Image 1: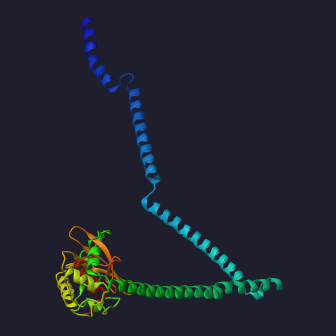
Image 2: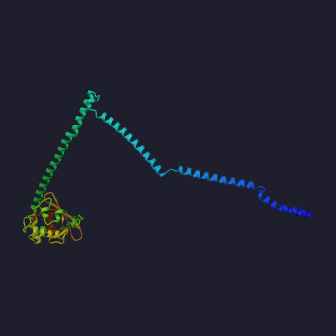
Image 3: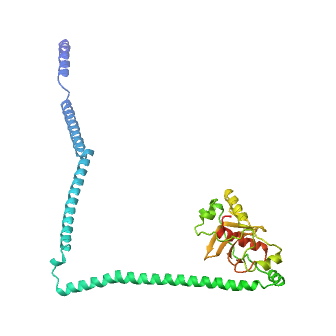
Length: 335
């Protein structure tokens, strides 16, 4: 019996083993089903993500689309502007037509037309006739007075100095020495003068005596003789001189200074330097000029007819030579 049991057990072992291999283990089907569901969910999730990404890409604006939309908006603005311009031009044209209508087309009364006519005549007279006549008359009157006054003043001035110069002819040597010994300061008006390049155009050429814009040629005609100044005879005796620098001496000095581009010439019998380009005529026979005395530059004035320096008779030969040099540059002859 025991043998039978053993045999029975041995005979059923392979069958049981095959049965265990062929039949699934308890709970294995549930696991398989869960894995399948998980795979489906992952696939569905990936599909949804792809769809969402595609929608996002499609929803983003493209550069070309933006440009097209901007161009459309600009075209629309231009069309609106043109329409507004047409409306404004039409409105202006209508207004101009309305304003350009002739007076005869306006509904004006006779009184209004008469008032407009009288106003136009009055304004035209005020602007034209009255203004021209009054301004012209006043301008001519002022010029005439100025010319007459200046001529009378010049004549009286010249006559007064001539009469005054006559008394100098009667002065003796003692009186001239007393006059010359008085203290008088001629260096009272400092001035600033530019260098040679500040000279006017006429003072930069060898033909300066012809290029002077105010003319000249009447001063210094006595050559090497004594100048015709009323005080000259008495002063020359006291100073011990008989002549003054001639026109040729001064002209040659100026020509050399122009060639060398020097702004000054040496005044004879002195250590002063005359800025020949600084001379300016005053009235008919006066002149203003600048001179350097070794320590500074000063403004002077002279009367070439009477030979006066700053309104007075010179007290030294150097002052007389300064007057002569300035007058020769301003009004002197060629030789």
